[in-house]
Image 1 (tube, rainbow, N blue to C red):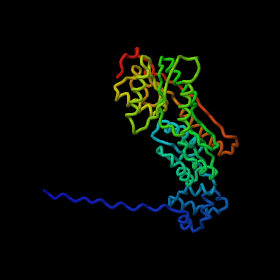
Image 2 (image 1 turned 90 degrees about the vertical axis):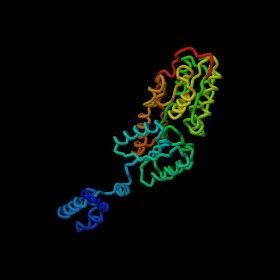
Image 3 (image 1 turned 135 degrees about the vertical axis):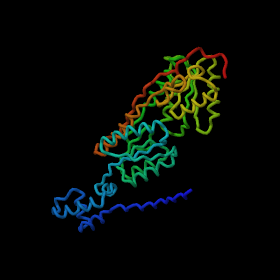
Image 4 (image 1 turned 120 degrees about the horizontal axis):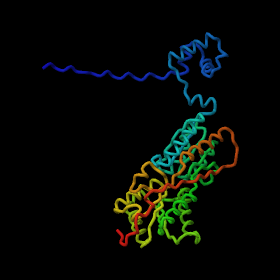
Length: 362
């Protein structure tokens, strides 16, 4: 058999260095200031021969001006910094999409910084984005680092807060109407016959949206006689303690007795944890336990009999946040604004009792 030929791959060519304005000036035989005039469309200050030489050099070297350098010259980068607490949260992604659309329509680009639910990085995010000369900030953070507010104020950049407030920061604020949405969720369960309720949240720890939703739930339980007698409790769920959530659901059914037990879950992350707990316990939504979950997701219609949700107007929240910031960048001077948008109840089988509650408990 003939010996197979050895194939040798040619070593990849080293990347071609990016041309600089000095390279263009050298190739055209002019100064860097002359090239700058040409690039800034001030070629009327140049003779036709010089303008032509610079044009040829730019094309030959495939020179592209640095956006950052241009931003420094004109004082505006047309970049907006968006800081989110957790990019894996469907809410954050949906708000990002809305903000991006509004920015694109207005001629701005978004730069994203994901905190990964680490509240200690908020100041780091502000400083990092400031280094890129962003014109302003949209913050959807945990709001725990007071230094982040100080950092933003120190740089003199306008800020819009989304969903979570920062103590001591006077800024435009765009969010869901948390109190109204909790009443909508809990009231729906009561209308469907649920009398023992459990509000499940991620650890509250001074995160304003979680505080507001928990407070609204407790206020709903304490309301007067215009609704049937309802009792309930709150529970903080953590990602690393599934057993505690299982125990909380067992206790919920035990307290309910012959009544229907229902859950309000504070966001999509918590809803998934409740779904997993229901699977571990072998229970079914709408039979052993009812559920209304905050956040409408792509998978909500397909879990069990379908999950009843409070849909947040995430696209509008993102658009309005970006719109408020762009107004500030254009010179609008108003007192800090608060914009609260209503949630929408989407009813599915998880909040529709299929039959009378069973006499025994799993």
